[in-house]
Every structure is written in structure tokens, then in C-alpha cells.
Amino acid sequence: MQLVEWAESTAEQFLKDSLPRRWAHVQSVAGRAGRLVSHLGRDGEILHATAWLHDVGYAPPLAVTGFHPLDGAHYLQTVDVPARVVDLVALHSSAAAEASALDLDEEMAGFVDERTLTRDLLWFVDMTIGPDGQCMDFEARMDDVRARYVPDHYVIRALDAGMAERRAAMARASEWIDSVGIADQV
Ligand SMILES: [Fe+2]
Image (tube, rainbow, N blue to C red; front, side, top):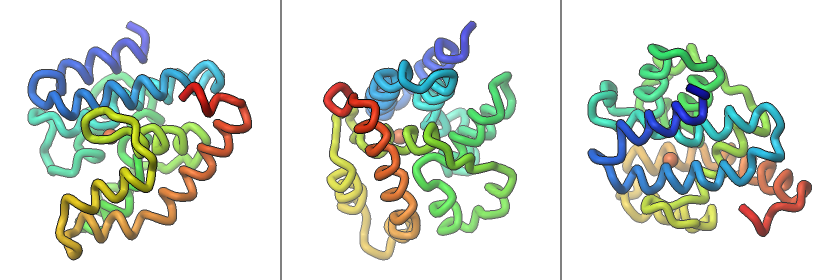
């Protein structure tokens, strides 16, 4: 089975019935990624597959540590996918900053942040799709997360710790999308 098809069926298997809201989010994230892939050359497959898989660590059978990027990456290390897929899932959307807030730096140390356009685009599609799969402006998406927690909650501390990196990734992704002239298609 090809990587993207495998990623979609794996995400469906783990999320569709047990976490339907998360599944709606993932379907939209993957849909948005799918509209970028033809402009990315060989990395299109990596972006599309990681968009399907990025939240698989929320699935109850995989949620060992409770930190979904790490749990998803640990699962992906047990199957035959490229190492880049594992690393991109482990570190998506500023997960490293969240891991620090949770004292999980040691557990995250083995994963590599490739800091590429593909990485930025994965963060972009995740951070512009809301929890129900709706398109959301980045700032509104951040406000939506913020509204769900008290100010000193670790999620808010982690959000703030990673905000500069999130904004930088958003800016680079948006600039590339504009440069290839597809802003009105994604
Ligand atoms: Fe997500």
C-alpha cells in the first residue's frame, strides 16, 4: 500500500469511531495538505501522509504518555514508515515547546526537527483548521485554544513558549503559498 493511502486508513482506524471530532479535524487538515502536494514535488507525499497521521497519538490504544505527538511518534516507530514521518509527527506545531512544559524534554530528545518547508506547511495546515474541521485563521485558532484553559495552565504556558516559532512557521508557509499563487485554492 502506498504511504498516503496507508496513513489515511490508519488514521481512520484509530480515530473515526473513538474520537469523531478529532477525526473531523484530521480529515480537514489532510484535505488542506492535499491541495498543496502537487506543488511540492516528492515532499508532497510526506506532507500528505503526516497530515493524516499527526494526531493519531490521541487514539486511546496509543495514548501511553498522554502527550499525543510523542505517543503518535512512538506508534509510528513500530511500523514501516520513513523516519521523517516519525519526526514530523513528534514535533508538529511546536510540540517541543509543549514537551518542555510537561518535562518531557528527555523523551523528545531523539526526534529531529527538520525545519523545512514541508515541516512549516504541516504546522500551517494544523494551525489553520479548527477542532471540528473548520477553516480558521491562525490567530483565531490560537485564541480558541487559549479560551479553553485557565491562564496558568501548562497548555497556555506551552502555547506561549512556542508562539514565536509557530508564527515564524506560519509566515514562511504563507509566503510560499503566495509565491506559488495558490492562496485562493487552499
Ligand atoms: Fe491537529
